[in-house]
Image 1 (cartoon, helix red, strand yellow):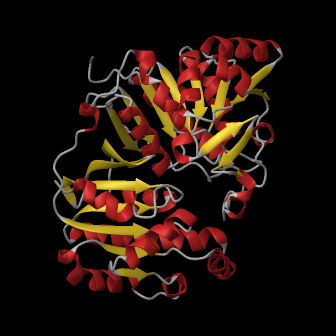
Image 2: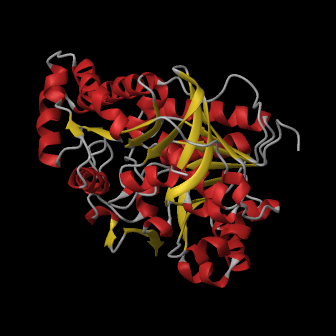
Image 3: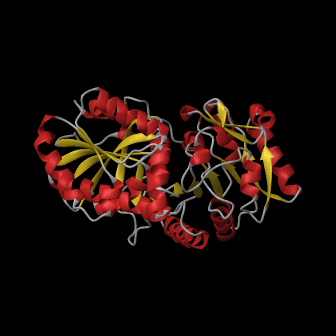
Length: 425
């Protein structure tokens, strides 16, 4: 295979989501490179799939469309045979988008009359039944996602959610069809297309469902999905799982965690690290807003501790505290302020010899990757479902560092300690 010929081209609407998708493709045997934004050069390494990580989930829909189409053109130039638009497993969006507008723009560019959408990721307890999205045992709108500061999800019916932001008619491929396998799914797709439906939510409550539907999607130009259905796609290209797809260089250097997520899972991970006696420092967003040199203070605190093991810097806060800060600074500015600060701290930590870095939170991950001037990452072995270790060169670490970008809601309570233990030979 030529260095510039890839099989699957993926466009992700945030950085941790990109890594989550890449992780599932690697587990299924594909060699995967993740790029940060759309590259301006051809791909220079061998890969079966490339995941282009955008930060387009919550920007204005027209900008998200423009960035996604640019990524599509680059992936097509690398030979991509199928396009995968990766969205959040909680289908994060508003009535304005961006899932519907981007999907429809990609369909138009690809000449696709029909596309599917499913955020199902059973390994991470995201399941879809009769078109309703469950997070664990509860409906999406009872999961805490109804309180999301940027994309509050108040309806679990994904057909309705997608229809509100789409011009095409949205239908459902329900579990009755999925349970019968690929031929039944293809028959249902044909039936919906004949009814004038252009987009369909697909049910899945188990990995077996994803593996059954995977072959049915072999000839679709575009898939819109969480990372779950990725486990079924490499087999469509004749690729089988292998450990070699996940090999990374040996780990070394100091260890640190920066966390900007306020999700329930990350709050538990922060508490677990503190309960184990790990050194942790909480950021005060109001102090940042008042102009204090918080970055210098944090790095001065961390420097003497780093040789003894990992340190944690976090801005995790309870929803009430978050709301109070948002009222004072505005929603967007409060979030951006914390992200910029954490990103500057991450850069300072790497300058101080950190070569194993855990970043928690999608927006924080995007900001940190940009602050480190990382252009692309090799995807390694999984720590928890949806979260692998990666290896990347940074401008302040040209020899490379190990990095994991953890979506706020992902990972077990002991994720931080488990992540570093996995890198220890």
